[in-house]
Amino acid sequence: MSVSAGGNAASHHLSRGFHFFLWTRGLSTMGNQMVLVALGWQMYDLTSSTWDLGLVGLAQFVPTLLFTIPAGQLADRVDRRLVLSLAIVVQLFASVLLAWGSATGFVGRDVIFIASVGLGIARAIQAPAQQAIVPALVGSGDLARAMAMSTAAMKFAVVAGPALGGFIYVAGPAVAYGVCAAIFVGSIACAFAISKVQVKKAKEPVSLRTVFAGFAFMKTQPVVLGAISLDLFAVVLGGATALLPVYARDILQTGPWGLGLLRAAPAIGALVMALALTRAPMDRHVGRRLFTAVAIYGASILVFAFSTHFIVAMVALAVSGAADMVSIVVRQTLVQLETPDDMRGRVSAVNATFISASNQLGEFRAGTTATWLGPVGSVVLGGAGTLLVVVLWIKLFPQLARRDKLVPGPVG
Image 1 (cartoon, helix red, strand yellow):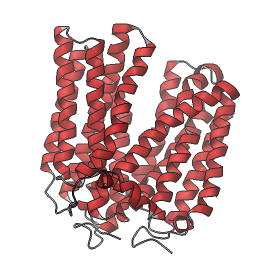
Image 2: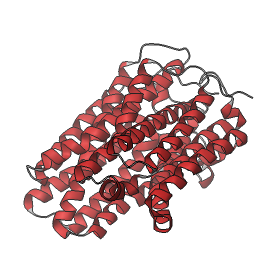
Image 3: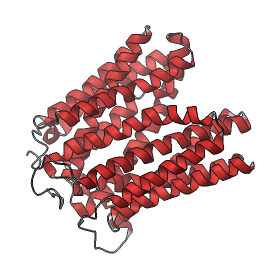
């Protein structure tokens, strides 16, 4: 097992550089969420086309899928602070372009698509470096706590960003994009304030083999492969986001306000759990806790499936978000601890690709099966499938199930 330069001994004092990283991630995520709200609203204002709204999402997803793996190679060869800053600079340029274009009347459908592609590329560049830099900023004993704090900052931004973006958009799209640009400037300043750390960089020549080395590494590490694949299949099967509009209108009999609360519920549950984990990090029985959390996630999806009362549905979704947060912290911490520093960018890229793909595939799975089984049947199938995956993965990855502590290395 590799321990980063900052992780020779457990420490209970998180570095100044890590706190600047938290601000970097929180501000960049908030700016990104605000831009996405403004993009969607402006596109619909311009075209009144739900098809175009779908294309905006696709224009971001495809570059993310294509460029995340190569971006992992970049994160293993270049100062990760600079890679992180580059990704945020791309988002800054997109915001400035949209603000100027909105103020002058230049923005149209094509400009929004171009900006969306740029945002997708930026997200691809940002994700591997953002995950891989954390172990270099904290001690190995503090990594689980640091991952929980990092995810909490992200979840807070995901909750607050869209609400703030929608409120500011009332003043006009140019103002909204301008505020986003200012937030990205603040995020870049924080990124440059992160102190330089010694990172072992990949030295072998760039080739297809080194670009995809993250996949090859995972095959030799059952703990890493098991943790990443467990999350992938749980989200693909259990994801019900695509069906929330159906539940809000047809089953729970609420309006758009209800849909907004249902969408926010998992993030609220995740944020509460993340804050709890920063105060009481997991130190024992992490494998058992990981599988228990995914099982609770599946069970909460089943409860939501049969919900006919709005409060019950909200609580079920909040519990699913809290359980998912436990899975996220355990998975990301294990991935970073079990990966050598010169491989962290590429393995983090694989992890980020799986996360992105699982969210999109989960929505596709929910929508297509709902066509055959109805919305309730689709969600029930997903929740039951998640519980089945938990049972299968305990058998397939016993090293992960028996894992006791995050530090030191794997059991078995």
